Image 1 (tube, rainbow, N blue to C red):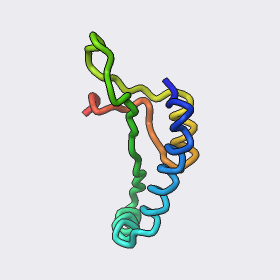
Image 2: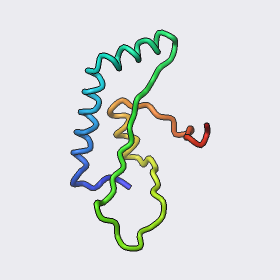
Image 3: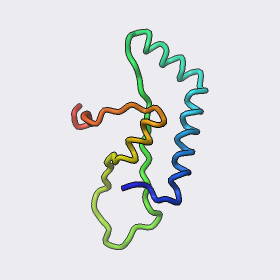
Length: 91
């Protein structure tokens, strides 16, 4: 499900701001540099879940998260690499 139109631009702005903050953080850059010197690449990412403030009566059940086409495009746009074949269940 795509995010509601009324907050879509806010989410894009949030992603841009997070990327800017991370790129300015010297401690993060230094740790990533050290990891890359050892031959590894680290991709940082985040997941945003959007839920209405009030849930409807009888709308029970577990929450699920799936990447849709909009999510994939957004993540690639802000430079986040991801592997859809891998999940926490693989550990």
